[in-house]
Image 1 (cartoon, one colour):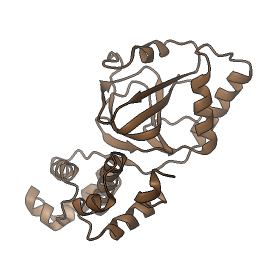
Image 2 (spheres, rainbow, N blue to C red):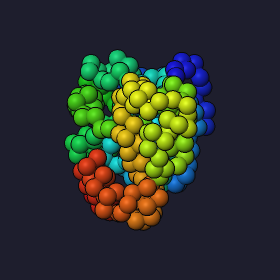
Image 3 (cartoon, rainbow, N blue to C red):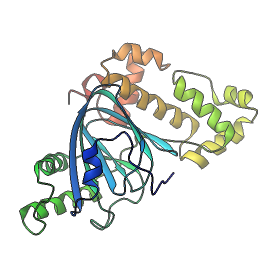
Length: 264
C-alpha cells in the first residue's frame, strides 16, 4: 500500500523535520520500551530501519518483517507501515532521498548489517544534519549508501497471501503459530483441495506451506526471545517436539542457536 500524502502521525517531531533536510541522508536515533508501537504512517523519503538492540516487527499492507539486531529493513518512500518493539529498542535509522545513490532497493527487504555498515550508521548518527556534502562527511555517507546497496538480503519477511482461503490459514497461523495441522487438514477447514492450496502458497507468497509456517514461527520466536522468554517454552508453544528441534530450525535460518543469537 502506498500513501503518498499521508501525514506522519504519532511519530517524533524530529522525524518530520528530517524529511526536509537538504541532504541525501538524515540520521535519527531514539530508544523505546518493549511493547511500544509507532502507528501506521509513511515518509516521503526511503527509510533504512535498524536497531542496535531489541527486535522490530514492521508491518505493511502486503507483508510483515521481523528485524533483529544485525539486520535492517529497507522501506521505500510513501509505503505505509507500523513498527512494534520487542525488548528495549535502540532505533538507529536513516532517511534517504529517492535519488541519493544508484543501486538502492526498489522494494521492501531485510538485509544483513555488516560490521562496517553498522559503524557507518553509528557515525552518521553523530553527523550534523547539514553535514558537509563535498568533504569527509559526505564521502562517509556515500560509502554508507554503497554498503546498503550491496547488503545481502535476509529471509525475515512473511508475505501476505491475497486468496481468501490462504488468508484464513495465514491469519490463524499468525495468531497461533504452534498449530500443527497439516495442509490436508487446512484444506478441509477452508473448503479447498490440498493440491490447490499446495499450488497457491508458492504462487502467492513464494514459499511452500511448510516454509511459510516455519517462517511465521521463526519471526514469532524472535520477538519472544527479545522479550527474554525461555527457549524451551517458546519451542513447545510453537509446536516443536523438543527444544533441540526448534534450535536446529533457528540455527539453519539465522546461523546461530537462539540461546546465543542476541548475545552475539
